[in-house]
Image (tube, rainbow, N blue to C red):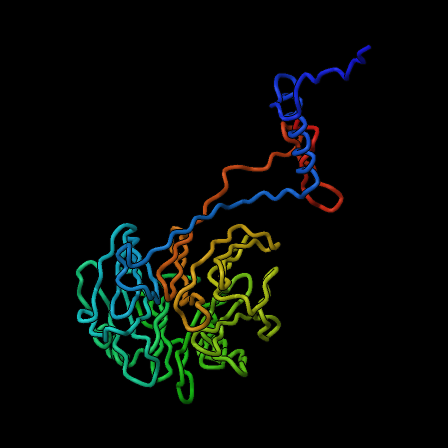
Length: 385
């Protein structure tokens, strides 16, 4: 007698799920996804970032970019070797070396005053005469600095020009005689550095009407022409003041392309430390915002909040630089529209940010969110169903 075999399966193992089986399967996947989400901290990002790279393919006259300024009409001005270019967001208008009366290989510092004049100064230092001038951006003419300053200094005397980070209409001009002037429609002498001038003198104003000045390996604070504080750096030259709030951050460079960053605390400079990054990994520091900090590593441009959460990680391409193909950064400028412009040896980078329109929803909602005993926000799985 034949023995009956096992009942036939309704669906073979390799047969696609159908009907209620498929519905049950996807519901279980949804439950597992919600449970998984409930076990990990929820991080709500307040800002969204966008990056655009601008280079010779877009009309930039050279891949190397040095300094940036913004005039009262909103145009962005970029310094490249032997040229200054005006950028309207779409096209470049370039002023060449013959117009500026500078060598074709020279880069220049830039600063824009409140009357729409663009100041420039060659990046030569103190060992040789510099060519400097002021471009009337609406008439495309150049003013001679000796005439403009009523004889305070000549074009060849100026060794550094910068714009205040605290009050943008203020310009600072340093001369090879060691005198630092502030200009805001009129000239005011900030300080006269005694002794030999060996490098640029960089100045920034403080909210208490004092000024910090960087020169070679000395950092001094002055007010009303009087010396208040002095800090000496042993091994590296002071390069620029990166931030003034909430703390003063300065950049030093041992060699031209090796930046280090320091925080002024209790009258001394301490090495700047960022979450998950050693000081040696920081290839450039660009912006210190109240909610985040923007910097570069050899591999990427990074935006990170002060708790260490990464808000952006934008990979950068290796270039033919001076150390293992690393991209070298020359500076950064934040314009009035809160666009961050970063200069480098391989083009210009623009970083824009906006508020994230999507917010985490708290309370009794479709996707409830509660805070656990460790202070982390977590999704509640029961609300996912």
